[in-house]
Length: 159
View 1 (cartoon, rainbow, N blue to C red):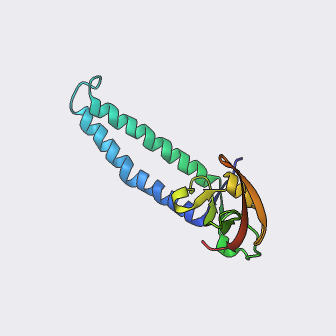
View 2 (cartoon, rainbow, N blue to C red):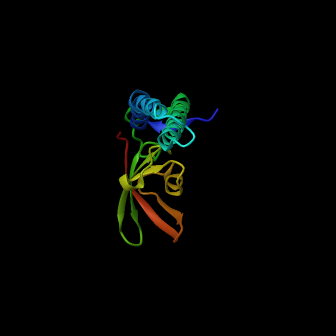
View 3 (cartoon, rainbow, N blue to C red):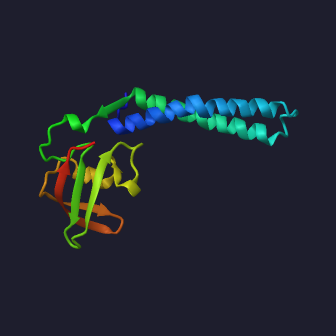
């Protein structure tokens, strides 16, 4: 069985989305289908076909979320002792050795990742390079532009 690692925050966000899909989106789509049926011939009824397509996407997403939550491995970083080691859920500040540019990332599950918010997937090349390392460790990360050397300057165990 595949386990989906996720933070407690990520699991809560998925539950919220599931609740919204089941209690708001699904009933709205069902009503739209019923209304479109009243317009007659379904073969040439674009509203009906659009609503059915939306229903398919909605039901697919509901199944996807339910499957992930049922196989979730929720890791609450607040309950773990900070020993300075980079693990799933930690917030890590690294500095580019060459340019002195600092960046802070939080290592999260695939569904939670959002590079604009500096949330990187545990399966990303950067996260894979960071996992298991400690403060003051240096590491080299392969990027599309070549290898970049980083130093870990801070590891936080915060949600």
